[in-house]
Amino acid sequence: MSPSALPFPEAERWFWRWEQFATSAVLHRIAMARMWYAQDGSLAVSMGVDGRTACGMSGRLFVPGVGSRLGAPRCRSCCRALGIPWGEGAPYNQAGAEWRDA
Image 1 (cartoon, rainbow, N blue to C red):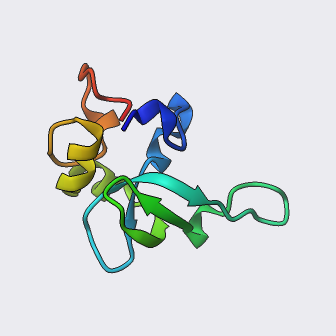
Image 2 (cartoon, rainbow, N blue to C red):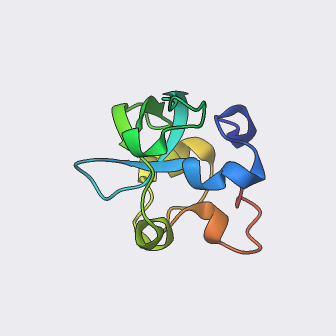
């Protein structure tokens, strides 16, 4: 699965790529999402997104807080699907890593 073919390939939207289900602390890579928009046309991120992850799970996902983006474990199956190493935090936080944009 190519990360550039998934939602939010733009560098400025990296923090929306890896999200969490309300019942889990694990970060999952969004593979498909139905976005919710506020009345002013902006993304209503706090409402979550109905989506499917790279590992095949489906449901409502939410953008994690800063602490989780830095330290929550990434889903091993999502990492395997993307061909990146398993670890903690969103890959974008791994300065210099060639898979940073996953």
